[in-house]
Image (tube, rainbow, N blue to C red; front, side, top):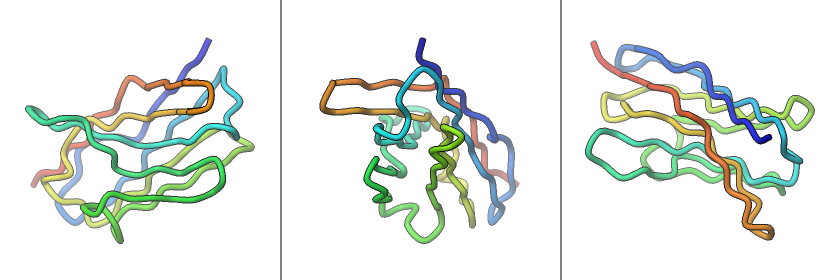
Length: 117
């Protein structure tokens, strides 16, 4: 049974920081591309950051230089460190695990991030 469990969301003031974690189980973690997506009210889900299985991080332009994605294959966990948060970063953040060759695509339940004063 595949599980992706996010944690670390919450309420933070503009300019603040948060670190999200996503613990995976039931998958061969090291073979998966791990990503963070977000969905704000009334908007489509969008890719925030991706850490591929061959250790290549990629970022949306809107978060480049503010967010850092990392992964620990020994702990089956992917992280999203967020700095200089803005109100427009407010959204539900979802963890995603994808192994394209086998059409495996899994989602976590999401964690709310709210940036507000």
